[in-house]
Image (cartoon, rainbow, N blue to C red; front, side, top):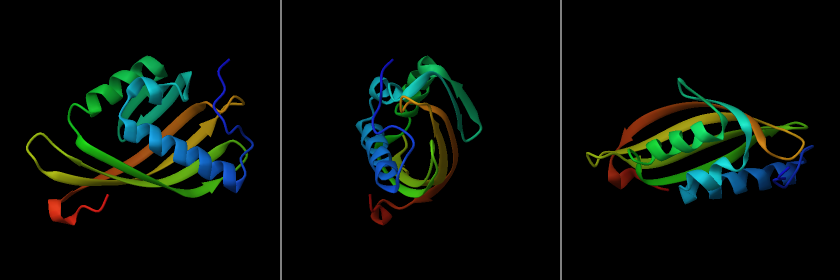
Length: 136
């Protein structure tokens, strides 16, 4: 079984390391790389969309970045326990019409003993912004 360090149980330091690894992976916009951090049967809720397993994760992310251009994400530590991490995040992107958005949200993550994410629940809201209001 593949392991993704750091492994649970998390300390404050290792939770923050895990968050930075996730942020870097998502900013790569590489669906295959990102999906490798999740269990084969990982469960997601992303807004009102439910995604199950790596294959669906790859498809979901591939489709996402066909609509969200110049994507830039920042994640911040919120809380953690033994095998769970909660983050606050925001990201900015441009749509096909050239309009800019900032998305805000929270994610709750649960990991297996190998450091792979089993569950990811994301609540996200989008706000249209002017290009001059971008800061990411």
